[in-house]
Image 1 (spheres, helix red, strand yellow):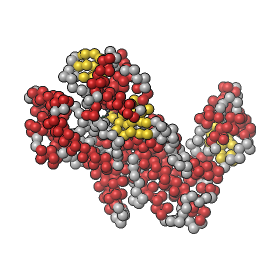
Image 2 (spheres, rainbow, N blue to C red):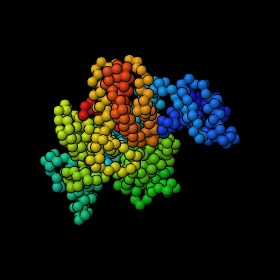
Image 3 (cartoon, rainbow, N blue to C red):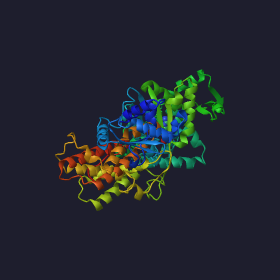
Amino acid sequence: MKAQLANCIAQNIKGLSPDEIISLLEVPPKPELGDYAFPCFCLAKVMRKAPNLIAADLKSAMEGQLDFIEEIQIQGAYCNFFIKKELFVKSMIESACTENFGGSSIGAGQSICIDYSSPNVAKNFHVGHLRTTIIGNSLYKIFTKLGYQVHRINHLGDWGTQFGKLIVAYKTWGSKEAVEERGIAELMDLYVKFHEEAENDASLIDQARGWFVKMEQGDEEALAIWQWFKDLSMVEYHRVYKLLGVEFDSYNGESFYRDKTQAVVDRIQKANLLKQSEGAYIVDLSEYNMAPCIIQKTDGGSIYATRDLAAIFYRKETYQFVKCLYVTGQEQKLHFAQVFKVVELLGNDWAAEQLVHIPYGLVSLEGAKLSTRSGNIIYAEDILLEAISKVKEIIEEKNPTLSDKDAVAQMVGVGAIIFNDLYNQRIKDVSFKWEKILNFEGETGPYVQYTYARCSSLLRAVPDFNESAPIDYAVLTDLTAMELLKAINKFPKVVQDAADKYEPFLISRFAIEVAQAFNRFYNNNRINVPEVSIRNARLKLTAITRRILRDALDLLGIQCPEQM
Ligand code: ARG
């Protein structure tokens, strides 16, 4: 309809193409202003006429030309078009019922790498890693919906000098039993102990360096201890991934690139970019107002940046990505800017456009008291488990006879945290207040899930309702139904915008808008009424809403309980 309207306007106004008109057409903020509005002030200069006169002429020219237009009104410089309600409802319902509604095939045949989560082995999975995991997973879902083939890469921090330190600490003060029993918490304590002791005993640093060199040379004992630490860390990370419902296609972390960094160094040298400075090999980036990118240390040990360079070349060759996204905290901004610049300087023009750092803000735990396992360190797993147990308490209080309480508590508890994390632009800091996150009536995950469960229960109440049967569109021409349909029909644009801006919060805002619009519709209209044609039309809209809420929450990585 929008396209037909644009064509018709184009025929009546010289100088603008239908496409230009489509981009000018607005959806008015209030229904009293019609369904589409065309602003005429941009034509005033070219046509040398007052915009309100242009609008008036357009109105009289178009009168009666389109059979789906009920009325055209002039409001200042705007031509407001009112579409015949029934036809508008029909067209909105038809579009919302198309297959893969909200998605597209714009990414078909193209691949995208997303590097996210990527915790540091032997360290706890903290709230910052929770954010990259949640944002990365949502971006994976969004790009998949647009037809891209997405490779989910967990670039584990499983290599580097810190493992030398850990091996020394373990061999000096650790015990197998304690590590086996306490896992990462024990390794964290050993690591802290190492730094405390190293203040007075510099030889520890040398020993640690020695062990890391051994690791790089493939020493069996060193690698066995490292592998053990890595395995036990993975067990803990997998518990978090399971709670979140997150999976990866590759766990090739930093250690995977240890035999691929020399080739990078050679390449940089061949390109005449390698310089020696203060005992390290670097690429000078002063021309680009950046600190130098350190490539190799004096002792030949490889470093984080070099492994990232190796990873980029490996991924380009393996996946032929059109984009490689990195979801990490803002503090790594410079690191990625340097690495991307080096790739570009090596003659890869695609780097600037295809390598994208996606930073996010900090998490603050306002008033969220958490038990800590080790010092003041907060484990993501503990936050998730606490959310689940709090929801369980709420269910016990409000709906004790609910079946599958544990599964529902998990979906809602985890969903609440994910939703809160994705409710604002990612660069904004996230604050954490249980009362706010778990408020079933606020702008929260539980509120959307609750609305979904309400739709499900309405549909369950009429088991013989057939969604594909024709309906009477006139039933859905009341204001609340039309507003709900308009909200729903924003989905495709919202998904595309979320992908363009790498911003899942656009999806969470959309989910809230649809849920609120549904609840207004529901409060205004009894759904399960005796008149079949009314009931069926309202149930149809309920079924569509239910599906859209489920799809939107799925794009955020949140599941929906059928009852709550
Ligand atoms: N392990 C790093 C950290 O926890 C994040 C790694 C991000 N990915 C990368 N390719 N550098 O801070």
